[in-house]
Length: 79
Image 1: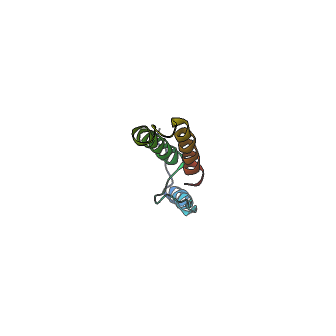
Image 2 (image 1 turned 180 degrees about the horizontal axis):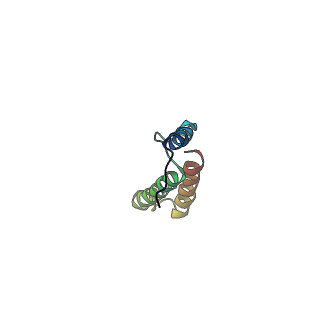
Image 3 (image 1 turned 90 degrees about the vertical axis):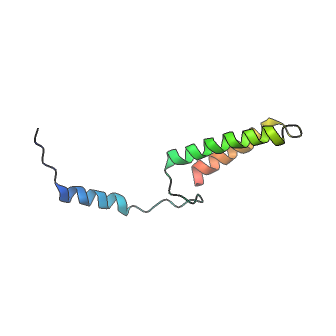
């Protein structure tokens, strides 16, 4: 049960993980894929609600669905 942990090896491993280049996207924060999916879903819901409140009388909601999906894909792919 007494397992020895090599601290030098752990430090080298942590340095190797930290040395990886950060992904550069257009979002102003450092994100992983889950963060970008979350932001995409959040913006999808917000855009749908704003569309229903202000634009649904003149432009169908289907247009909003297409725009929101395209925005979500862009955020996950390039964000």
